[in-house]
Image (tube, rainbow over all chains, first blue to last red; front, side, top):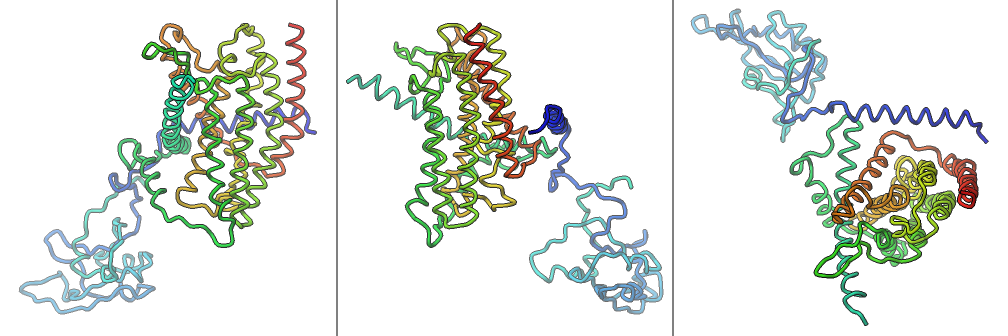
Length: 157
Length: 335
């Protein structure tokens, strides 16, 4: 048999629990209506790769292949070519004629970002990576240069 | 034979009651999911139609069109009989609960209760007792260990908690002096206010036994999903599962209806004498308030262990209700 004080303590504890849930009832729900509303991500959130350009339209990538060397899973494949001086693709001597990222191998570690000397490859905020065929996971240079605007808002770090 | 008074009017009332109960059940699931969501700081269902009001309809359609399976090596007759035997008594509970005063329609005075019987409370107890068989038969016929364990738990839980509930009911009946639920709502000899207040004191204990009798959280031992998969309904799918689901919610509705009638004056409220149609509105409002309490409990309290459940009943609730009954008996005689 439990003592009377135990009973009252138990009732008090349960009442406290009821208070917690009642308090939650009057709070604003934390749900994000995701496809309609953007998701809040941190500034350093790492998702789909992007290749960036300079403001004058030239590609930043100079085809140095450091990202390919830095990649721990071998997800990046770069082939470099000489720039035509009259009509250059990038400001350097060379540019990437082929730049492919295999998203099935990528672990989103960000080492390519760190390795890049010209800050050409970055991991963006677009996390909607689902595709309906395996070919869709292989990002070609065209897709990397023209990323879609991600459905996110960047929150304070 | 008076066909109109004995057959047609009760039949119409029953049909209306069944329709109201079944749609009420469907939107009770919506109400619960929405409210549980808010308790957990979520929004709850909101995809189908406005405020997610289409979800119950979508659920019903999905349940109906699911494949019906009967596992091999089961008792087929009992397997099908289980859900049927569970839902019929759950619907029958409401036959004796008055939902409003008499109203006059087409020059006829119609009491808003399907059958005004003298043994109202006994009817409720008897019918819910039969309802337990549906669960036990279903669990037994499923030929599944989890189902059997769930069914066994149901039987011992129901038996244990019917004791304190029954004893509290004796105390309540001592105060009202009748078993007829209509007379409990509108007593011939008015019940003094101090006895009413004393009755309200018993409500928390009665509410706990209600939770156990309807096997709601935190006493949902027949289906403890983290121990027994889904308990007695593990092997049930399609509409048979839906029938068990319906039973659970109809039991909640029935229990709330009985509790409102016993403790909170049933359909009575201000201005009911002038506008009789307000009676059902008050009744529904009171039942909804109690259902809110049910959902609040299920959002707040974790499930105890099975032995704790029975120990709590036999060493705490049972003596408490006995003491309460003894005091009530003395008070009714002396005051």
